[in-house]
Image 1 (cartoon, rainbow, N blue to C red):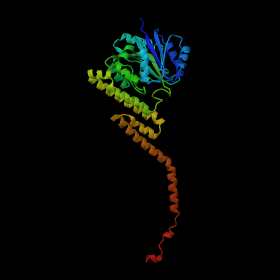
Image 2 (cartoon, rainbow, N blue to C red):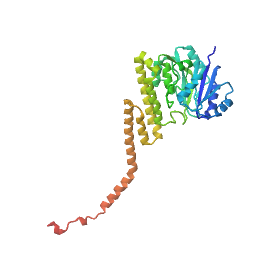
Image 3 (cartoon, helix red, strand yellow):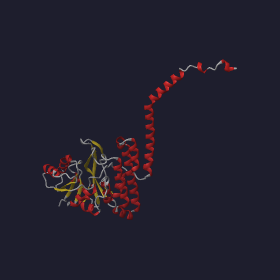
Image 4 (cartoon, one colour):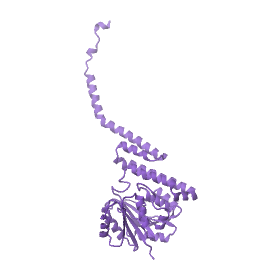
Length: 352
């Protein structure tokens, strides 16, 4: 019997992407798919009208009377899923037609694996590939080895928003954790699922993450991004599933946590020093760096960068002021040279 797979599509305000998302689901070569479309943007009848026009197969629709935070919305979809496997699919992304079938085959082949992950591509709105993960990966890794490879960038994974896992295991571990901004909840869920288990990796299917100005992490300011990072750091010390793992595997968790913390501060520093440096005023950009909790390595990088930026700013201001300084200097020089020295000559009578 072919297991049922639930694909949940969360909707907020970007209704223009709904037809594209539905086309991706329709293009899957896997025969047993339950599609749940969930409206969290109080859009009235607009969403079901769009789905009815672009999705000819049976589907389930749910709608929140009021907008809830992202993690609560995602968990609502999980709770309504009836499939053996679950995929959360953001409306602006893409999956290869064999995405579902390939990942289901992996988890059916590897019962010890809690998660199946595909190859990844980051693409622009036109579909042009900007970055991609490596083409060849091991088919199975322990959860700890996978997290190590992820944190060290060995396979160049960028997101775990769309992966395949067992629905009952997501529910059993408490689902998506409470993160007010939603940033980082996919990473957090992955950690809860895979530590102490295994991760299956596919070289045969692709998840494409589209990068728009409205994409989470690119549309928010740096302080909002840091809120998600702070919550993820707190999560590492407070989540009951992770704490249980830490008690039974203290050395492994200590190393996993060290790697994750390093990845978090490096990611935040890189975005602060590139993307948000161009968006914010110099003063706000400098202040925003100190929104992160105290991590010595992070702040060493920040202080070094701020020192260099201040020097560069001072040099730039000096260059802009130089024409004025040069004109003042020339004016003073001309004034001094034109002064007659005769009036400085003492009278002869005073030289006695």
